Length: 250
Length: 309
Figure 1 (cartoon, rainbow over the protein chains, first blue to last red):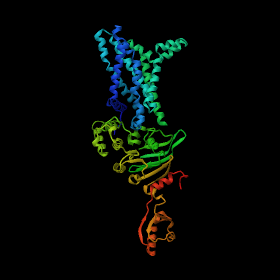
Figure 2 (cartoon, one colour):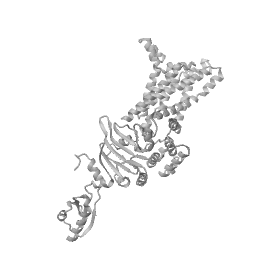
Figure 3 (cartoon, rainbow over the protein chains, first blue to last red):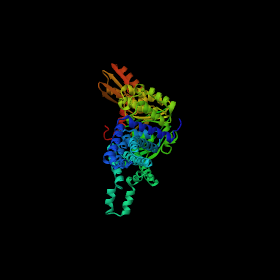
Figure 4 (cartoon, one colour):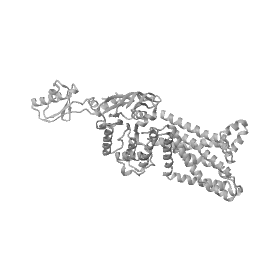
């Protein structure tokens, strides 16, 4: 029997994980809700038509908020379900490294979110039909949005590894992600500058996804922003592996 | 194949497994007995590399389970407690997934899936989703998963739990068959399984090993082993207890049971009892030599002292 490479293990686990989304109706419900919300916020709340702008800023601006609820809903089951049903024991006694399983499960869920995001393509077509937008800016927006969902998802994986209860995992990750939004949300930073040192406010804001998502919306792919999102993902997945190891160590 | 030395596992202050040492060779089926909470599952989880031990060493096929985890895991098939599987997958999909993680692809994967499907009688539910299956089928699906790569070492946590008597019988036969060429450890608290499937059994209690031997040796630890029971109309207890081989005599619903001084000399005792009955002209309805009973042994060595009579 030949030994599996990490890539083969990751592919096998990710394939199983991704297909498990589509065997239940939940995935389709999620996709529909995501598309409805994205449309609703863009056209109604974001007054897409009234702006008279050939850009998708009304679309991307809402993503941190839409993802706040929807990404934890996608990711909450990733580890807690394995813990609850006991399949975690099965998975981790296979000749598989824990990090391979963690990465595979994250990538599968991220791919699912990418599918959801890709299905918003009619809005990019709409804006191209109606006007003459900067498509580079739109592409950057999509990259930023994808990274943003990855950061939320990695945090959800982490909270999901903490508990066998999906609801707890959901609530914890919403709270953590909300914190990452609010640290750089203008109304909050404005309030903070009134009693705190502006340098401190800036440091806090540097931890916010909003601060780093802004650049992408403006069409700029800054390596610092890229680094921020990738390091949030890396850190959260590393924390997941520590949590899983501690859980096993008892 | 499996070598366990001074294995200890603590959860906080509680020692779940306390200084356990034993080994299992190829061709052996080791029955792992003990009351609930004795540390059976914890031990198996450590052998399969799911839980790291607090102290001690485990090696499987010469590979240390902690240091060389992947090599050790490759040799093992594991049926976890409650036979967990992914409820949203089909039987075929689930077995295919297990095969892929075991490094089997393409034709080899197909062949392996077919083999275990036949072995575990899953042909009729191959395309069914696992959560629509009855418990017996779900259990056998997970069992099939543990056999998919024809492992040299098989670890099974309560493999017959929740099965009906026919299925239990099939699984025991399967275990016995596997035991001819593999090293097998299985836990159970059904004592009849020990005689039916094991070549050796270990009893653990509160994390410690309290007995280790063949089913025969364990049975002989029973008080009852070697006793001769005689049902005769005018039997005389005093004359029976006067026999040189007899330790004591007990009256049991109309019959008399003679316990031997020396358990290995039960044949001599039986002969003396028969001779005595012949000399005295008792009308014997039945006479039998008792076998030791495992449940009595089990109870005696795993009950706390205060409960023992």
